[in-house]
Length: 112
Ligand code: AMP
Image (cartoon, rainbow, N blue to C red):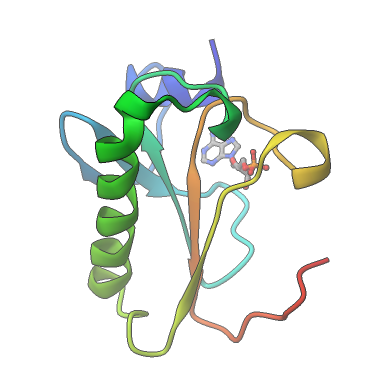
């Protein structure tokens, strides 16, 4: 079981900012920006390589909820970045799909 599943099951604490039947969002424990939230599907999917056609609505809602959380966090107008890391070269460290919502400072491009 990944650490995110343990957060979903309330086995370990997290600073949860949003939750519904399908998704949960909590603050990253090692924030890389003034706002750094992880938005996570509750159903376990290891990475975006594993997505299926039947996941398209959920993934659409994931992006929509991310934009709503950005608005709630006050970074919608200043701007923010959504990041999904995949596997080793993508920098994925937790094998459970999640989108990083990063904002509150200017982001560099290209990423390192
Ligand atoms: P990634 O490297 O894309 O897989 O992102 C995993 C993220 O999970 C990292 O930014 C970690 O800081 C974050 N993280 C790991 N453990 C926890 C935790 N217990 N609570 C909140 N965030 C965590």
